[in-house]
Image (cartoon, rainbow, N blue to C red; front, side, top):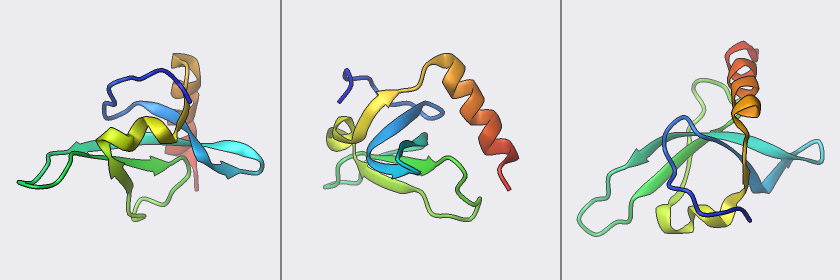
Length: 88
Protein backbone atom coordinates (compact mmCIF):
# COMPACT_ATOMS: atom_id res chain seq x y z
CA UNK A 1 0.00 0.00 0.00
CA UNK A 2 1.10 3.55 -0.66
CA UNK A 3 0.83 6.82 1.21
CA UNK A 4 -2.60 8.39 1.52
CA UNK A 5 -3.27 10.88 -1.26
CA UNK A 6 -6.50 12.71 -2.04
CA UNK A 7 -7.59 11.17 -5.35
CA UNK A 8 -8.28 13.54 -8.23
CA UNK A 9 -9.48 12.88 -11.79
CA UNK A 10 -6.57 12.23 -14.14
CA UNK A 11 -4.30 10.67 -11.51
CA UNK A 12 -2.75 7.31 -12.48
CA UNK A 13 -2.09 4.41 -10.09
CA UNK A 14 -1.22 0.74 -10.02
CA UNK A 15 -4.01 -1.44 -8.66
CA UNK A 16 -3.02 -3.64 -5.74
CA UNK A 17 -5.54 -6.38 -6.56
CA UNK A 18 -5.52 -6.53 -10.37
CA UNK A 19 -2.67 -7.40 -12.70
CA UNK A 20 -1.91 -7.71 -16.41
CA UNK A 21 0.65 -10.34 -17.44
CA UNK A 22 1.98 -10.59 -13.86
CA UNK A 23 2.41 -6.80 -13.66
CA UNK A 24 0.18 -4.49 -11.63
CA UNK A 25 -2.62 -3.07 -13.75
CA UNK A 26 -2.56 0.67 -14.35
CA UNK A 27 -5.68 2.75 -13.85
CA UNK A 28 -6.67 6.38 -14.17
CA UNK A 29 -9.19 8.12 -11.92
CA UNK A 30 -12.02 9.35 -14.12
CA UNK A 31 -14.20 11.13 -11.57
CA UNK A 32 -15.10 11.58 -7.93
CA UNK A 33 -18.86 11.20 -7.67
CA UNK A 34 -20.77 13.41 -5.27
CA UNK A 35 -22.42 11.42 -2.52
CA UNK A 36 -26.16 11.06 -2.33
CA UNK A 37 -28.03 11.69 0.90
CA UNK A 38 -26.95 8.38 2.44
CA UNK A 39 -24.13 7.18 0.18
CA UNK A 40 -20.39 7.66 0.47
CA UNK A 41 -18.45 9.52 -2.23
CA UNK A 42 -17.30 7.16 -4.98
CA UNK A 43 -13.96 7.13 -6.78
CA UNK A 44 -14.42 6.00 -10.40
CA UNK A 45 -11.45 4.61 -12.31
CA UNK A 46 -10.69 2.86 -15.59
CA UNK A 47 -7.97 0.41 -16.62
CA UNK A 48 -5.31 1.40 -19.12
CA UNK A 49 -6.41 0.01 -22.47
CA UNK A 50 -10.11 -0.25 -21.60
CA UNK A 51 -12.52 0.29 -24.46
CA UNK A 52 -14.17 3.73 -24.49
CA UNK A 53 -17.58 2.17 -23.87
CA UNK A 54 -16.39 0.09 -20.88
CA UNK A 55 -18.07 1.02 -17.62
CA UNK A 56 -15.75 2.56 -15.04
CA UNK A 57 -15.06 0.64 -11.87
CA UNK A 58 -15.75 2.41 -8.59
CA UNK A 59 -15.14 2.09 -4.88
CA UNK A 60 -16.12 4.05 -1.78
CA UNK A 61 -13.67 6.91 -1.26
CA UNK A 62 -12.81 5.70 2.25
CA UNK A 63 -11.69 2.32 0.83
CA UNK A 64 -9.76 3.71 -2.14
CA UNK A 65 -6.36 3.69 -0.40
CA UNK A 66 -6.73 -0.08 0.07
CA UNK A 67 -6.59 -0.74 -3.69
CA UNK A 68 -3.69 1.56 -4.56
CA UNK A 69 -0.40 -0.31 -4.81
CA UNK A 70 1.42 2.89 -5.74
CA UNK A 71 0.92 6.17 -7.58
CA UNK A 72 2.65 6.47 -10.93
CA UNK A 73 5.45 9.00 -11.22
CA UNK A 74 4.76 12.00 -13.48
CA UNK A 75 6.83 10.36 -16.23
CA UNK A 76 4.97 7.04 -15.91
CA UNK A 77 1.62 8.84 -15.87
CA UNK A 78 2.51 10.75 -19.06
CA UNK A 79 3.50 7.48 -20.75
CA UNK A 80 0.30 5.75 -19.54
CA UNK A 81 -1.80 8.63 -20.90
CA UNK A 82 -0.15 8.30 -24.32
CA UNK A 83 -0.62 4.51 -24.26
CA UNK A 84 -4.30 4.99 -23.39
CA UNK A 85 -4.81 7.40 -26.29
CA UNK A 86 -3.22 5.02 -28.82
CA UNK A 87 -4.53 1.71 -27.51
CA UNK A 88 -6.65 -0.05 -30.17
